[in-house]
Image (cartoon, rainbow, N blue to C red; front, side, top):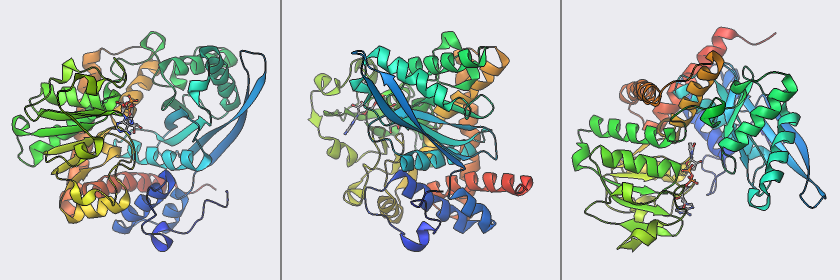
Length: 431
Ligand code: NAD
């Protein structure tokens, strides 16, 4: 175990880490917050404070000009008590061991709150993918697959796309793994193109789950969707899909944004007519009559605010100015712990990322089932089953929320941690 992985409880020595806080700090804070509400063996909590394994590998590739560069890659595997590890692989210059550990812990909670038979993992390579040609990226991915071959697999650890990686990257990874194993094994990764075992509906799933949860929140608080105003930060895979679905279902989307700024129309935006990040990158403001800043978008007086771009955007600095009644987290970690406390004091309901955007990993689970069974599902079936899973997770979280008089975030972590702790109790500690 690395020395940076202190075993001290963060609630003991650093209750509010300085902003912006790291994924690992947040993950540990949330573990201890949830554990404080539950009667759990402290040894299990201590175990969950640490990853089970962190694999660090070096990945040499031949550049197109014949020179060789060596990159560092990681795969952090947190907990597998409920099933194989599951989580993304990112190619980004800021990828570090600790970031992979923190994000791997988040994946454990996300899978558990959705009741998926997976534990959490995260990995990646510290590289700027924009500096790689397509051929270099393919060679890097195939070599990374080879370096991780012994520690991944459909029953062991199942990677998925993340920042800087995409369905094509997963297809190369699956191919490299399968070639070495001597048989086609589509279930080793998810988020593949449908032609090689990917699932219909995977791409839209995180945004779809954000929309489903937003609708459930509105129903719960007797807020008709037809009288609900929504602001969405980020108009990419998560933000655009969530905005469009909510628009289709009757909500009034008054603001959407990308990195250049936000489009604002209090009468409601026709979300289908504005291209998403995928369709035309960073073009939102070109379609706008009125442009406001991303900071202004976050503090608009709307019913629902959906931060769906980046982490750490709702902070101590702006939490007092958030005017929305509900924040539904589309991005991972958009609210810092300090901001979270301020919002809780102000009775702003924050529906956490591990529930709201969990549609992605849920449809990854469907993809894995389809791969194992060698039988693909229709888009209609994927969307129907996603809806069912989201409602089941919502019901479990709502029950804790009502029974314990806590925040929605604490309720979600309590659902997740109880399931993990019960599984640990039932299995016991080997030997
Ligand atoms: P994306 O690349 O498709 O879109 C990101 C959007 O955010 C773009 O519109 C971009 O212009 C905008 N953006 C970037 N920087 C910004 C800034 N400083 N201010 C405002 N907008 C900015 O990304 P995505 O896949 O939609 O992911 C968004 C968030 O959701 C990330 O936090 C990601 O980790 C999280 N997430 C994604 C998935 C998934 O499968 N796509 C699943 C769960 C969570």
